[in-house]
Length: 50
Image 1 (cartoon, helix red, strand yellow):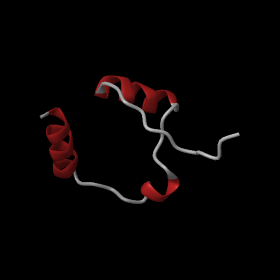
Image 2 (image 1 turned 60 degrees about the vertical axis):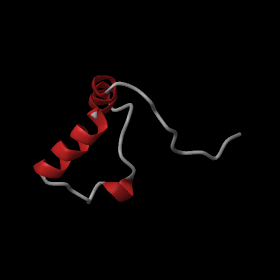
Image 3 (image 1 turned 30 degrees about the vertical axis):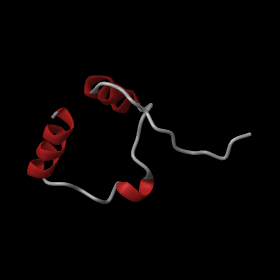
Image 4 (image 1 turned 45 degrees about the vertical axis):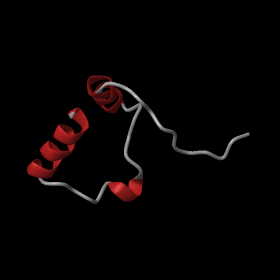
């Protein structure tokens, strides 16, 4: 039996967003209070796209 709670998920952004919308993928509790501004989120997605 594995004690692993989290796992790495590779996939297209659209697929990952779909997992988030269905509740199959979520941020760990400790990450939720941290909120990025729109510019930071845009820059993150831009860097992942490049």
